Image (cartoon, rainbow over the protein chains, first blue to last red):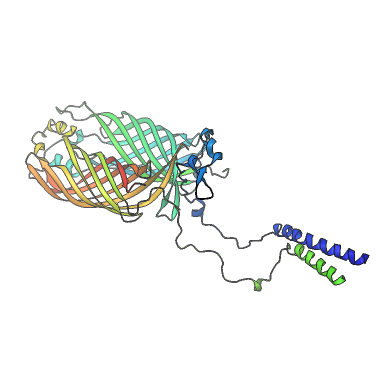
Length: 278
Length: 232
Protein backbone atom coordinates (compact mmCIF):
# COMPACT_ATOMS: atom_id res chain seq x y z
CA UNK A 1 0.00 0.00 0.00
CA UNK A 2 2.93 2.24 0.74
CA UNK A 3 4.37 1.86 -2.84
CA UNK A 4 0.96 2.53 -4.39
CA UNK A 5 0.64 5.66 -2.30
CA UNK A 6 4.06 6.83 -3.49
CA UNK A 7 3.12 6.29 -7.16
CA UNK A 8 -0.09 8.29 -6.67
CA UNK A 9 1.91 11.14 -5.19
CA UNK A 10 4.36 11.04 -8.11
CA UNK A 11 1.55 11.07 -10.69
CA UNK A 12 -0.21 13.91 -8.90
CA UNK A 13 3.01 15.87 -8.78
CA UNK A 14 3.63 15.23 -12.48
CA UNK A 15 0.14 16.43 -13.39
CA UNK A 16 0.66 19.59 -11.38
CA UNK A 17 4.15 20.33 -12.67
CA UNK A 18 3.47 19.46 -16.33
CA UNK A 19 1.50 22.61 -17.29
CA UNK A 20 4.05 24.81 -15.57
CA UNK A 21 6.93 23.20 -17.45
CA UNK A 22 5.01 23.45 -20.74
CA UNK A 23 4.27 27.13 -20.33
CA UNK A 24 7.87 27.83 -19.35
CA UNK A 25 9.13 25.89 -22.32
CA UNK A 26 6.83 27.75 -24.71
CA UNK A 27 8.20 31.09 -23.56
CA UNK A 28 11.72 30.02 -24.26
CA UNK A 29 11.19 28.76 -27.81
CA UNK A 30 13.64 30.53 -30.07
CA UNK A 31 12.12 31.58 -33.40
CA UNK A 32 14.47 31.26 -36.30
CA UNK A 33 13.05 33.50 -39.02
CA UNK A 34 15.44 32.73 -41.78
CA UNK A 35 13.00 34.16 -44.28
CA UNK A 36 12.21 37.31 -42.35
CA UNK A 37 10.08 39.80 -44.24
CA UNK A 38 12.15 42.71 -45.56
CA UNK A 39 10.18 45.84 -44.90
CA UNK A 40 9.82 48.42 -47.59
CA UNK A 41 11.69 51.54 -46.55
CA UNK A 42 8.62 53.60 -47.26
CA UNK A 43 6.85 51.81 -44.48
CA UNK A 44 9.56 52.65 -42.02
CA UNK A 45 8.90 56.28 -42.67
CA UNK A 46 5.17 56.07 -42.82
CA UNK A 47 3.52 59.32 -41.94
CA UNK A 48 1.32 58.83 -38.95
CA UNK A 49 -0.85 61.76 -38.16
CA UNK A 50 -1.07 62.65 -34.50
CA UNK A 51 -4.34 61.53 -33.05
CA UNK A 52 -6.60 64.44 -32.26
CA UNK A 53 -7.45 64.40 -28.55
CA UNK A 54 -11.11 64.49 -27.75
CA UNK A 55 -12.25 67.71 -26.21
CA UNK A 56 -14.39 66.01 -23.59
CA UNK A 57 -11.61 63.96 -22.01
CA UNK A 58 -12.36 65.22 -18.55
CA UNK A 59 -16.01 64.51 -18.97
CA UNK A 60 -15.46 60.83 -19.66
CA UNK A 61 -18.35 58.80 -18.34
CA UNK A 62 -18.29 55.35 -16.80
CA UNK A 63 -21.24 53.20 -17.81
CA UNK A 64 -23.34 52.21 -14.84
CA UNK A 65 -25.85 49.40 -14.47
CA UNK A 66 -29.22 50.45 -15.65
CA UNK A 67 -27.89 52.62 -18.49
CA UNK A 68 -26.93 55.57 -16.28
CA UNK A 69 -23.43 57.02 -16.27
CA UNK A 70 -21.37 58.80 -13.64
CA UNK A 71 -18.22 61.00 -13.85
CA UNK A 72 -14.96 59.06 -13.66
CA UNK A 73 -13.19 60.26 -10.54
CA UNK A 74 -9.68 59.24 -11.75
CA UNK A 75 -9.73 61.79 -14.59
CA UNK A 76 -10.54 64.74 -12.37
CA UNK A 77 -6.89 65.63 -11.82
CA UNK A 78 -5.85 65.65 -15.46
CA UNK A 79 -6.24 69.40 -15.69
CA UNK A 80 -3.53 69.99 -13.12
CA UNK A 81 -0.89 67.81 -14.78
CA UNK A 82 2.32 69.60 -15.78
CA UNK A 83 2.82 69.89 -19.56
CA UNK A 84 5.78 68.21 -21.20
CA UNK A 85 8.69 70.62 -21.52
CA UNK A 86 9.97 69.05 -24.74
CA UNK A 87 7.49 67.40 -27.04
CA UNK A 88 8.96 65.69 -30.07
CA UNK A 89 6.20 66.02 -32.63
CA UNK A 90 8.06 64.50 -35.56
CA UNK A 91 10.82 61.96 -35.92
CA UNK A 92 14.49 62.94 -36.16
CA UNK A 93 15.84 64.72 -39.22
CA UNK A 94 16.63 62.32 -42.01
CA UNK A 95 19.42 64.40 -43.51
CA UNK A 96 22.06 65.13 -40.85
CA UNK A 97 23.96 68.41 -41.24
CA UNK A 98 25.87 69.14 -38.04
CA UNK A 99 29.60 69.59 -38.73
CA UNK A 100 29.13 68.71 -42.38
CA UNK A 101 29.88 70.60 -45.58
CA UNK A 102 27.36 71.10 -48.34
CA UNK A 103 28.18 71.71 -51.99
CA UNK A 104 25.29 72.97 -54.08
CA UNK A 105 25.48 72.99 -57.90
CA UNK A 106 22.61 74.87 -59.44
CA UNK A 107 21.05 76.40 -62.51
CA UNK A 108 18.02 78.63 -62.99
CA UNK A 109 16.58 81.89 -64.21
CA UNK A 110 15.95 85.44 -63.08
CA UNK A 111 12.18 85.75 -62.77
CA UNK A 112 11.77 89.51 -62.79
CA UNK A 113 14.06 90.84 -65.48
CA UNK A 114 11.79 92.67 -67.93
CA UNK A 115 14.38 93.27 -70.63
CA UNK A 116 16.75 90.30 -70.57
CA UNK A 117 16.43 86.56 -70.46
CA UNK A 118 18.91 85.48 -67.83
CA UNK A 119 20.30 82.03 -67.26
CA UNK A 120 21.80 81.62 -63.79
CA UNK A 121 24.35 78.96 -62.87
CA UNK A 122 26.82 78.53 -60.07
CA UNK A 123 27.85 76.81 -56.91
CA UNK A 124 27.64 77.26 -53.17
CA UNK A 125 29.78 75.78 -50.43
CA UNK A 126 28.34 75.71 -46.93
CA UNK A 127 29.26 74.47 -43.50
CA UNK A 128 26.77 73.66 -40.74
CA UNK A 129 27.69 74.25 -37.13
CA UNK A 130 24.47 72.65 -35.93
CA UNK A 131 21.39 71.14 -37.55
CA UNK A 132 19.88 74.62 -37.79
CA UNK A 133 22.71 77.03 -38.42
CA UNK A 134 25.41 77.31 -41.02
CA UNK A 135 27.43 79.61 -43.26
CA UNK A 136 27.53 79.51 -47.04
CA UNK A 137 29.79 81.01 -49.72
CA UNK A 138 28.08 81.80 -53.03
CA UNK A 139 29.38 82.15 -56.56
CA UNK A 140 26.73 82.81 -59.23
CA UNK A 141 27.19 83.61 -62.90
CA UNK A 142 24.54 85.05 -65.19
CA UNK A 143 24.33 84.73 -68.93
CA UNK A 144 21.91 87.24 -70.46
CA UNK A 145 20.31 87.72 -73.83
CA UNK A 146 18.01 90.54 -74.91
CA UNK A 147 14.29 89.93 -74.91
CA UNK A 148 12.18 90.92 -77.90
CA UNK A 149 11.13 94.17 -76.27
CA UNK A 150 14.75 95.16 -75.74
CA UNK A 151 15.70 94.44 -79.33
CA UNK A 152 12.70 96.40 -80.57
CA UNK A 153 13.56 99.35 -78.37
CA UNK A 154 17.00 99.40 -79.92
CA UNK A 155 16.05 98.70 -83.52
CA UNK A 156 12.69 100.44 -83.91
CA UNK A 157 12.84 103.22 -81.34
CA UNK A 158 16.56 103.85 -81.20
CA UNK A 159 16.49 103.53 -77.41
CA UNK A 160 19.98 102.84 -76.09
CA UNK A 161 19.60 99.45 -74.47
CA UNK A 162 23.06 99.67 -72.93
CA UNK A 163 21.32 101.98 -70.46
CA UNK A 164 19.62 98.95 -68.96
CA UNK A 165 21.73 97.34 -66.28
CA UNK A 166 21.76 93.58 -65.89
CA UNK A 167 23.92 91.46 -63.57
CA UNK A 168 26.73 89.24 -64.84
CA UNK A 169 27.84 87.61 -61.57
CA UNK A 170 27.42 87.62 -57.81
CA UNK A 171 29.93 86.68 -55.11
CA UNK A 172 28.96 86.66 -51.48
CA UNK A 173 28.32 84.90 -48.23
CA UNK A 174 25.23 83.93 -46.27
CA UNK A 175 24.11 82.97 -42.84
CA UNK A 176 21.79 80.01 -43.17
CA UNK A 177 18.94 79.03 -40.84
CA UNK A 178 17.12 75.71 -41.20
CA UNK A 179 14.20 75.86 -38.77
CA UNK A 180 11.72 73.66 -40.61
CA UNK A 181 11.91 70.06 -41.62
CA UNK A 182 9.39 67.49 -42.60
CA UNK A 183 8.47 64.69 -44.91
CA UNK A 184 6.25 64.63 -47.89
CA UNK A 185 4.53 61.77 -49.64
CA UNK A 186 4.66 61.46 -53.42
CA UNK A 187 1.38 60.14 -54.82
CA UNK A 188 0.90 58.41 -51.48
CA UNK A 189 3.51 55.86 -52.55
CA UNK A 190 6.84 57.03 -51.21
CA UNK A 191 8.19 59.41 -48.60
CA UNK A 192 10.66 62.22 -49.25
CA UNK A 193 12.22 63.97 -46.23
CA UNK A 194 12.98 67.64 -46.74
CA UNK A 195 14.31 70.75 -44.98
CA UNK A 196 13.16 74.34 -45.38
CA UNK A 197 15.74 77.08 -44.90
CA UNK A 198 16.19 80.82 -44.91
CA UNK A 199 19.41 82.63 -45.73
CA UNK A 200 20.57 86.21 -45.45
CA UNK A 201 23.83 87.79 -46.43
CA UNK A 202 25.62 90.06 -48.79
CA UNK A 203 28.26 90.35 -51.45
CA UNK A 204 29.12 92.02 -54.70
CA UNK A 205 27.26 91.98 -58.01
CA UNK A 206 29.11 92.64 -61.22
CA UNK A 207 27.02 94.17 -64.00
CA UNK A 208 27.13 94.73 -67.74
CA UNK A 209 27.76 98.40 -66.88
CA UNK A 210 31.23 97.50 -65.55
CA UNK A 211 30.15 98.25 -62.01
CA UNK A 212 30.51 96.13 -58.86
CA UNK A 213 28.01 97.42 -56.36
CA UNK A 214 27.57 95.93 -52.87
CA UNK A 215 24.53 93.73 -52.81
CA UNK A 216 22.06 92.50 -50.21
CA UNK A 217 20.80 88.94 -50.44
CA UNK A 218 17.80 87.19 -48.89
CA UNK A 219 16.87 83.65 -49.81
CA UNK A 220 14.66 80.73 -48.96
CA UNK A 221 14.45 77.22 -50.24
CA UNK A 222 13.87 73.55 -49.74
CA UNK A 223 16.15 70.53 -49.78
CA UNK A 224 14.50 67.23 -50.71
CA UNK A 225 16.71 64.42 -49.46
CA UNK A 226 17.50 61.53 -51.77
CA UNK A 227 19.68 59.92 -49.13
CA UNK A 228 21.81 61.08 -46.20
CA UNK A 229 24.38 62.67 -48.50
CA UNK A 230 22.44 64.00 -51.49
CA UNK A 231 19.42 66.21 -51.96
CA UNK A 232 17.54 68.11 -54.63
CA UNK A 233 17.54 71.76 -53.63
CA UNK A 234 15.21 74.51 -54.78
CA UNK A 235 16.22 78.06 -53.96
CA UNK A 236 14.53 81.43 -54.44
CA UNK A 237 16.80 84.41 -53.80
CA UNK A 238 16.38 88.17 -53.91
CA UNK A 239 19.37 90.38 -54.67
CA UNK A 240 19.21 94.15 -54.31
CA UNK A 241 21.83 96.65 -55.45
CA UNK A 242 22.37 100.09 -56.97
CA UNK A 243 24.23 100.61 -60.19
CA UNK A 244 25.15 103.48 -62.47
CA UNK A 245 24.56 103.12 -66.21
CA UNK A 246 26.65 104.06 -69.19
CA UNK A 247 23.94 106.22 -70.70
CA UNK A 248 21.93 108.62 -68.58
CA UNK A 249 18.95 110.78 -69.40
CA UNK A 250 21.15 113.18 -71.33
CA UNK A 251 23.33 110.52 -72.82
CA UNK A 252 26.02 111.08 -70.20
CA UNK A 253 27.39 108.47 -67.85
CA UNK A 254 26.28 108.50 -64.26
CA UNK A 255 22.56 107.75 -63.96
CA UNK A 256 22.02 105.60 -60.90
CA UNK A 257 19.22 103.12 -60.50
CA UNK A 258 18.12 100.59 -57.89
CA UNK A 259 17.84 97.04 -59.13
CA UNK A 260 16.39 93.93 -57.62
CA UNK A 261 16.71 90.47 -59.10
CA UNK A 262 14.70 87.43 -58.13
CA UNK A 263 16.59 84.23 -58.86
CA UNK A 264 14.94 80.80 -58.95
CA UNK A 265 17.43 77.95 -59.07
CA UNK A 266 17.27 74.19 -58.90
CA UNK A 267 20.15 71.83 -58.36
CA UNK A 268 21.79 69.04 -56.48
CA UNK A 269 23.52 69.39 -53.15
CA UNK A 270 26.06 67.00 -51.74
CA UNK A 271 26.86 66.64 -48.05
CA UNK A 272 30.23 65.47 -46.76
CA UNK A 273 31.79 63.83 -44.86
CA UNK A 274 29.55 60.80 -44.65
CA UNK A 275 26.95 60.29 -41.97
CA UNK A 276 28.18 57.01 -40.48
CA UNK A 277 28.06 58.47 -37.01
CA UNK A 278 24.30 58.58 -37.11
CA UNK B 1 1.43 1.60 -11.85
CA UNK B 2 4.83 1.56 -13.54
CA UNK B 3 3.12 2.33 -16.85
CA UNK B 4 1.36 5.30 -15.33
CA UNK B 5 4.68 6.55 -13.99
CA UNK B 6 6.31 6.21 -17.40
CA UNK B 7 3.40 8.02 -19.06
CA UNK B 8 3.76 10.91 -16.62
CA UNK B 9 7.50 11.02 -17.28
CA UNK B 10 6.99 11.11 -21.04
CA UNK B 11 4.43 13.89 -20.77
CA UNK B 12 6.74 15.89 -18.53
CA UNK B 13 9.75 15.53 -20.81
CA UNK B 14 7.68 16.31 -23.92
CA UNK B 15 7.14 19.82 -22.61
CA UNK B 16 10.88 20.40 -22.46
CA UNK B 17 11.42 18.72 -25.80
CA UNK B 18 9.03 21.21 -27.40
CA UNK B 19 11.49 23.98 -26.64
CA UNK B 20 14.09 22.53 -28.95
CA UNK B 21 14.61 24.10 -32.39
CA UNK B 22 13.50 21.70 -35.05
CA UNK B 23 15.49 21.82 -38.24
CA UNK B 24 13.82 20.43 -41.32
CA UNK B 25 15.55 19.18 -44.41
CA UNK B 26 15.61 21.56 -47.36
CA UNK B 27 13.28 19.39 -49.45
CA UNK B 28 10.69 19.41 -46.70
CA UNK B 29 10.43 23.19 -46.60
CA UNK B 30 7.93 25.16 -48.64
CA UNK B 31 9.41 26.15 -51.96
CA UNK B 32 7.14 29.03 -52.93
CA UNK B 33 7.86 32.51 -51.60
CA UNK B 34 6.01 33.57 -48.52
CA UNK B 35 7.14 37.19 -48.70
CA UNK B 36 4.14 39.53 -48.71
CA UNK B 37 3.68 41.61 -51.83
CA UNK B 38 2.10 45.02 -51.46
CA UNK B 39 0.43 46.06 -54.68
CA UNK B 40 -0.74 49.38 -53.36
CA UNK B 41 1.62 50.66 -50.70
CA UNK B 42 0.13 53.54 -48.76
CA UNK B 43 2.74 56.04 -47.60
CA UNK B 44 0.37 58.29 -45.73
CA UNK B 45 -1.97 56.18 -43.66
CA UNK B 46 -4.43 58.83 -42.58
CA UNK B 47 -4.39 62.33 -43.98
CA UNK B 48 -5.16 65.02 -41.47
CA UNK B 49 -6.26 67.31 -44.31
CA UNK B 50 -8.19 65.17 -46.77
CA UNK B 51 -9.13 66.67 -50.14
CA UNK B 52 -11.31 64.09 -51.82
CA UNK B 53 -14.84 65.36 -52.34
CA UNK B 54 -14.19 68.75 -50.75
CA UNK B 55 -14.63 72.23 -52.16
CA UNK B 56 -11.76 74.67 -51.80
CA UNK B 57 -12.22 78.44 -51.62
CA UNK B 58 -9.30 80.78 -52.06
CA UNK B 59 -8.54 84.50 -52.05
CA UNK B 60 -5.19 86.04 -52.90
CA UNK B 61 -3.13 89.11 -53.67
CA UNK B 62 0.03 89.24 -55.70
CA UNK B 63 2.23 90.98 -58.22
CA UNK B 64 3.45 90.42 -61.74
CA UNK B 65 7.19 90.15 -62.10
CA UNK B 66 8.36 90.77 -65.62
CA UNK B 67 6.13 93.28 -67.37
CA UNK B 68 8.53 95.96 -68.67
CA UNK B 69 6.12 98.87 -68.66
CA UNK B 70 3.49 98.12 -66.00
CA UNK B 71 3.47 96.98 -62.41
CA UNK B 72 0.29 95.01 -61.89
CA UNK B 73 -1.15 93.76 -58.62
CA UNK B 74 -3.83 91.08 -58.92
CA UNK B 75 -6.64 90.71 -56.38
CA UNK B 76 -8.34 87.42 -57.00
CA UNK B 77 -10.11 84.33 -55.83
CA UNK B 78 -11.21 80.92 -56.90
CA UNK B 79 -13.28 77.89 -56.14
CA UNK B 80 -12.33 74.32 -56.94
CA UNK B 81 -13.65 70.84 -56.37
CA UNK B 82 -11.29 68.00 -55.47
CA UNK B 83 -12.24 64.92 -57.47
CA UNK B 84 -9.93 62.85 -55.26
CA UNK B 85 -6.75 63.36 -53.25
CA UNK B 86 -4.71 64.24 -56.32
CA UNK B 87 -6.91 65.90 -58.93
CA UNK B 88 -9.10 68.98 -58.77
CA UNK B 89 -11.02 71.20 -61.17
CA UNK B 90 -11.82 74.82 -60.52
CA UNK B 91 -12.36 78.37 -61.65
CA UNK B 92 -9.96 81.17 -60.78
CA UNK B 93 -9.99 84.84 -61.61
CA UNK B 94 -8.45 88.15 -60.66
CA UNK B 95 -8.73 91.86 -61.19
CA UNK B 96 -5.43 93.70 -61.68
CA UNK B 97 -4.55 97.10 -60.27
CA UNK B 98 -1.97 98.61 -62.62
CA UNK B 99 0.52 101.44 -62.74
CA UNK B 100 3.34 102.33 -65.11
CA UNK B 101 6.74 100.97 -64.15
CA UNK B 102 9.86 103.02 -63.48
CA UNK B 103 11.20 102.07 -66.89
CA UNK B 104 8.59 104.13 -68.77
CA UNK B 105 9.91 107.43 -67.46
CA UNK B 106 13.47 106.22 -67.82
CA UNK B 107 13.08 105.16 -71.46
CA UNK B 108 11.08 108.21 -72.53
CA UNK B 109 13.80 110.48 -71.30
CA UNK B 110 16.53 108.59 -73.11
CA UNK B 111 17.77 109.82 -76.49
CA UNK B 112 15.36 108.63 -79.18
CA UNK B 113 12.88 107.17 -76.74
CA UNK B 114 10.36 109.95 -76.32
CA UNK B 115 7.87 108.91 -78.98
CA UNK B 116 6.80 105.52 -77.64
CA UNK B 117 3.02 105.67 -76.93
CA UNK B 118 3.08 103.91 -73.58
CA UNK B 119 -0.41 105.14 -72.77
CA UNK B 120 -1.70 103.10 -75.68
CA UNK B 121 0.00 99.97 -74.39
CA UNK B 122 -2.51 97.32 -73.38
CA UNK B 123 -2.18 95.91 -69.90
CA UNK B 124 -3.77 92.86 -68.30
CA UNK B 125 -6.82 93.98 -66.32
CA UNK B 126 -8.62 90.74 -65.48
CA UNK B 127 -8.70 87.06 -66.25
CA UNK B 128 -11.11 84.19 -65.66
CA UNK B 129 -9.65 80.73 -66.16
CA UNK B 130 -10.84 77.19 -65.78
CA UNK B 131 -8.07 75.32 -64.02
CA UNK B 132 -6.92 71.76 -63.45
CA UNK B 133 -4.78 71.08 -60.40
CA UNK B 134 -2.58 68.07 -59.74
CA UNK B 135 -1.40 67.53 -56.16
CA UNK B 136 1.16 64.72 -56.04
CA UNK B 137 2.86 65.86 -52.84
CA UNK B 138 1.31 65.85 -49.38
CA UNK B 139 3.29 65.93 -46.19
CA UNK B 140 3.93 67.50 -42.86
CA UNK B 141 6.55 69.82 -41.48
CA UNK B 142 7.85 70.64 -38.05
CA UNK B 143 8.75 74.17 -37.06
CA UNK B 144 11.58 73.80 -34.51
CA UNK B 145 9.81 70.70 -33.10
CA UNK B 146 7.09 72.81 -31.52
CA UNK B 147 4.26 71.92 -33.85
CA UNK B 148 3.29 70.09 -36.99
CA UNK B 149 1.70 71.62 -40.07
CA UNK B 150 0.51 69.86 -43.17
CA UNK B 151 1.53 70.97 -46.61
CA UNK B 152 1.01 70.19 -50.27
CA UNK B 153 2.81 70.94 -53.51
CA UNK B 154 0.69 71.18 -56.66
CA UNK B 155 0.93 72.02 -60.32
CA UNK B 156 -1.79 73.77 -62.29
CA UNK B 157 -2.85 74.19 -65.90
CA UNK B 158 -5.51 76.68 -66.90
CA UNK B 159 -7.16 78.36 -69.86
CA UNK B 160 -9.77 81.05 -70.31
CA UNK B 161 -10.39 84.68 -71.07
CA UNK B 162 -8.16 87.67 -70.43
CA UNK B 163 -9.27 91.29 -70.49
CA UNK B 164 -6.85 94.02 -71.53
CA UNK B 165 -7.21 97.75 -71.18
CA UNK B 166 -5.39 100.81 -72.52
CA UNK B 167 -6.00 104.45 -73.33
CA UNK B 168 -7.08 103.26 -76.77
CA UNK B 169 -9.84 101.04 -75.32
CA UNK B 170 -10.49 97.57 -74.04
CA UNK B 171 -9.71 94.26 -75.62
CA UNK B 172 -10.17 90.63 -74.68
CA UNK B 173 -8.71 87.40 -75.82
CA UNK B 174 -7.80 83.84 -75.03
CA UNK B 175 -5.04 82.94 -72.65
CA UNK B 176 -3.60 79.99 -70.80
CA UNK B 177 -1.44 79.45 -67.74
CA UNK B 178 0.82 77.03 -65.93
CA UNK B 179 1.79 77.23 -62.31
CA UNK B 180 3.30 75.73 -59.21
CA UNK B 181 1.89 76.27 -55.75
CA UNK B 182 2.43 75.25 -52.16
CA UNK B 183 -0.18 75.15 -49.41
CA UNK B 184 0.49 75.19 -45.69
CA UNK B 185 -2.40 74.22 -43.42
CA UNK B 186 -2.90 75.61 -39.93
CA UNK B 187 -5.99 73.48 -39.32
CA UNK B 188 -7.77 70.68 -41.17
CA UNK B 189 -9.66 73.34 -43.14
CA UNK B 190 -7.65 76.55 -43.22
CA UNK B 191 -4.28 77.31 -44.73
CA UNK B 192 -2.19 79.70 -46.79
CA UNK B 193 -1.12 79.25 -50.37
CA UNK B 194 1.85 80.61 -52.31
CA UNK B 195 1.63 80.42 -56.08
CA UNK B 196 3.91 81.11 -59.02
CA UNK B 197 2.11 81.27 -62.36
CA UNK B 198 3.07 82.00 -65.93
CA UNK B 199 0.37 83.59 -68.10
CA UNK B 200 0.46 83.45 -71.87
CA UNK B 201 -1.75 85.71 -73.97
CA UNK B 202 -1.66 87.95 -77.01
CA UNK B 203 -1.60 91.73 -76.91
CA UNK B 204 -0.58 94.66 -79.08
CA UNK B 205 3.14 95.36 -79.04
CA UNK B 206 3.33 99.16 -78.92
CA UNK B 207 7.12 99.27 -79.00
CA UNK B 208 6.91 98.45 -82.69
CA UNK B 209 6.44 101.46 -84.96
CA UNK B 210 3.54 99.58 -86.55
CA UNK B 211 2.01 97.74 -83.58
CA UNK B 212 0.98 94.12 -84.03
CA UNK B 213 -0.26 91.38 -81.73
CA UNK B 214 2.37 89.21 -80.09
CA UNK B 215 2.41 86.44 -77.50
CA UNK B 216 3.29 87.81 -74.08
CA UNK B 217 4.42 85.91 -71.01
CA UNK B 218 3.60 87.33 -67.62
CA UNK B 219 4.95 85.80 -64.43
CA UNK B 220 2.82 86.32 -61.35
CA UNK B 221 3.41 85.46 -57.69
CA UNK B 222 0.52 85.40 -55.28
CA UNK B 223 -0.05 84.74 -51.60
CA UNK B 224 -3.48 83.87 -50.33
CA UNK B 225 -5.67 81.95 -47.95
CA UNK B 226 -7.59 78.75 -48.62
CA UNK B 227 -10.53 77.14 -46.86
CA UNK B 228 -11.86 73.64 -47.42
CA UNK B 229 -15.54 72.75 -47.20
CA UNK B 230 -17.21 70.88 -45.64
CA UNK B 231 -15.37 71.76 -42.46
CA UNK B 232 -13.81 68.94 -40.44
